[in-house]
Length: 466
Image (cartoon, rainbow, N blue to C red):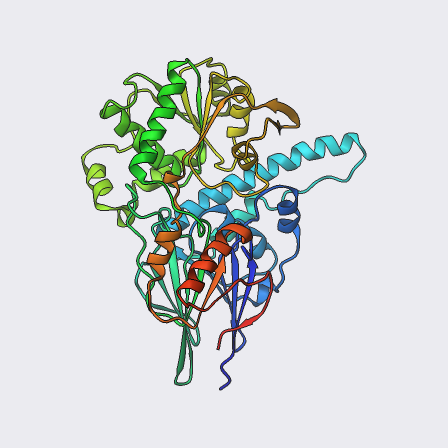
């Protein structure tokens, strides 16, 4: 029997978002992830383009985790003919449901807004990328899998999920492809977590494999030690509150919001933060995700698991959960003294844009970025020092204090990536999911020094892995 394996990277090739990896072997087609591109008009166009493959020909899909840039095009895949199974951990399935429903709601809302403008101009009605009905249909194709359990995916292809320590339920995935007496192992890192995470376990080190498809988000740099980052975080909040300003923290709803709440609670208990302060979690998705956290103790590190048994690890006096739009709007009437966590982390959508519009121009206020911001996003423009940004087509001056604290990152830095990869011989490491001139090139230089064969795939390029 012929034994020919082709790999194609249809997303996150020499860029950060849109993760989508395609393995083809002996007429069987498997996808790892199918995510949205994020970062402006180019990303919107990329999301609307047809897939570079026939969705109906994909036999199975493996989902590493529930972030939108890894799962966000699944409803499109199903709408266009995919009828296989979507394999993911139970926690990822729970989170993917709320992530995709939230995204569909925003898509429909944006489409209605564009339709109102378009009709006044005599234009055709804009359509959402996908709808709530598309998401409900997609959820029917999910199948839960457990960490460390090897299972048959298609004839000749087996899979095993390994804890990636990135967000709740996140996984690296090992594919074993069999052809007669031959076997090729391909390891997909997914997004790898930052070691020492207070909530989750560390990523399981890479097992021996022939090929590794590895993320490089922070492949060119080291994070600050977490202790120093937490101290800076507390100082940023205290400094802003002392001058009677508001603190805006753009947060990813999955994991980052929960970690920030956990650290705020610890800071108040230890005396690093004021005992009386109003904290708003203004994200329906983050609120739902916090509930899901409590249902999946199999994902937690020992420290957080102990706190979960004894008390609510997120609850504290002065914490407000705001699901309703009216309650969210009311927050913007607060002139000072509020700590507001809202999505999205890259400020590409969600309620945080409204809070930035009302607070960014005031020098009393502070904005704390605690996660990665891709090129072209509103968060990245603010981080890079823009004096003025446009929010809802209105120019807003940037006068508030800006902090970027990368020690909270849910991504492994360069040292952690290399530690995860280890020293086992590899035929080749394929570098993906990073900015080409930064994360990818930085990691490529490190692999070159170590004599590890590596390659940076171009989008859609077919690479033979045998």
